[in-house]
Image (tube, rainbow, N blue to C red):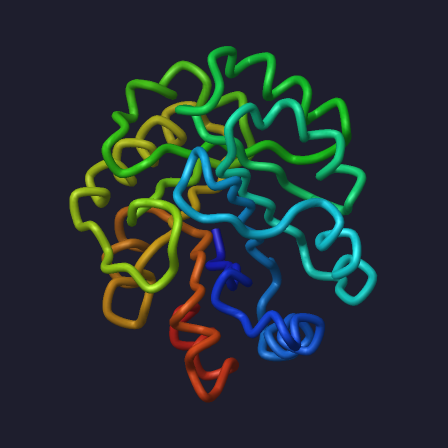
Length: 215
């Protein structure tokens, strides 16, 4: 699989959000990572469906919507209607993973499942082959700019083995502390989608930052 960089708008300048999104698209990004936080599941509040529907009008990027919220099933329809292409929910926030997968698919969106750094892969082992993407958090979710947690690398490798054994085409995404130093081990472990917030948006050359991760 080719490497895809999904810049996280959590680190963008929200005063110029449409311009920031256009800039990363022109710099070679194919996906846009949109972190949705409710102040309950994680200790931060970000954006909701209204903002996503507004930026959808300004971008043709693949919208990679990451729900870090309690009861994500309650809001799937709203995010799908707002323009999400992929909706990722947290295993820790949902009791019936199969029902969440079916609900997201019913709105013609791709499905992702995510686990936090301290959550075992065993939690999602039985349903990895039912989703389109597995997102492994390599920081504690809530805020950008955190240091990469190296203990996540064996978990990436474990998910990769499960996917390879299944013979299915399922993406592995890693979010947190991705930069030109950590990217090599992440990709070697099996990830093909890289979420990069601070590294891209704090760089003075978005194209150079994205290219350094892809290469």
